Amino acid sequence: MRIALFITCVNDIAYPQTGIAVTRILERLGHTVDFPTAQTCCGQMHANTGYRAEALPMVHNYVEVFDRYDAIVTPSGSCTAMVRDQYPHLHPAAASVAARTYELSELLVDVLGVTDVGAEFAERVTYHPTCHGLRMLRLGDKPLALLRQVRGIQLVELGDPEECCGFGGTFALKNPDVSTAMLTDKCRRVLDTGASVLAAADNSCLAHIGGGLGRGRSGVRVMHYAEILASTGASA
Image (cartoon, rainbow, N blue to C red; front, side):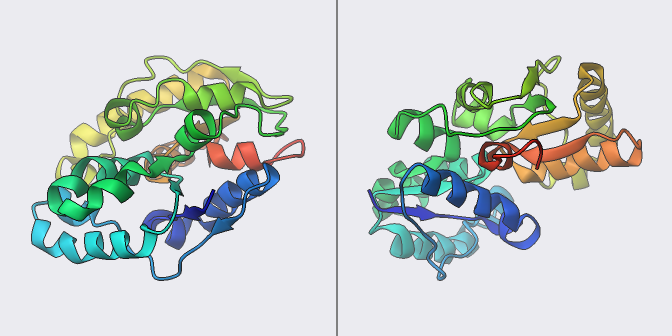
């Protein structure tokens, strides 16, 4: 199977370790992962704020770059949802490549049939299901199924997990008071678990929650769940 990594803007710029983690997981399972250097932004920011015409060159580029692969994996529920949900409406030729674009847990569980990736991570962890993964991709418990197989992990349930963290891209900028109130509730739920690590499928949401936890000097770290799955030691 020819697999390509779509790293996404946020991860490429601020969280490159997440893309490295995805590659390590798949290589550990015996797969080769390509990284096409011509990839760019998926255009989600543009399309979601009404600039559909400006998003089209990025959609065209995505199709051109990734069409030759059997599977495209990305460590972002948000960007996966953009490609799968919006691309077919923006570019008629995008439907095929969009259908072959998977969030990491979808590729591992649904396509490769794997839940145990040989990870070890001896910490107390709670998981926040981000909105795009939860409501658009309907990931369900796939990320949790993978985390449950991690050796040494103590996985604890997050209270009211389906509540949004308040980030929502430009929502946090346009509605700062509401966003902050939602963030406060989410941080409180995280602290109630006693976890040392909060995991999620989107680093954008983790940046938002991590900012709140950091300002409160909570001591709780945030990590993309791919980084936990890539770990083979006591901690990352």
